[in-house]
Image 1: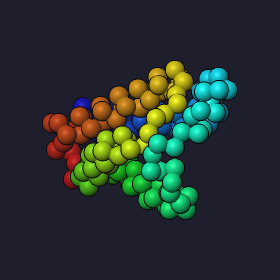
Image 2: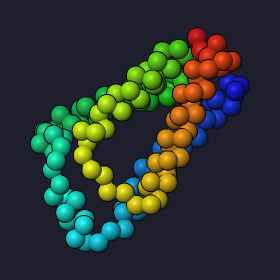
Image 3: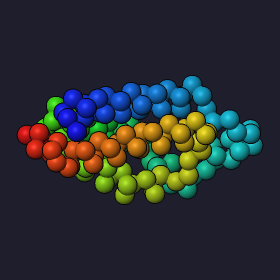
Length: 135
């Protein structure tokens, strides 16, 4: 893959993340009122028992790291590649502790697109000839 094609993948990933976020806010899952109430009462995770300010601070640090990784990937920087890989590993370890998710079919579809793009980015970045472009 060429560096231009790779940058296109990174840009498409960012756009898909924005679409996923907007869809999640503007289009809540079409579920019954009963299920929505039960989901709101769900408190299986440690996150529900934490201070909101602490969670907001942690989220801000994570968002900054994600943005830095995306910038590093787009600019073909080796540190961006390794930061992206590390964040992916951290996400895979942390996700089971987040508890259940309530999603619509649209959310699942958009999430699959986002995950597919991210996988394509990581595979492309770690394989030749693009791997040699990272400096």
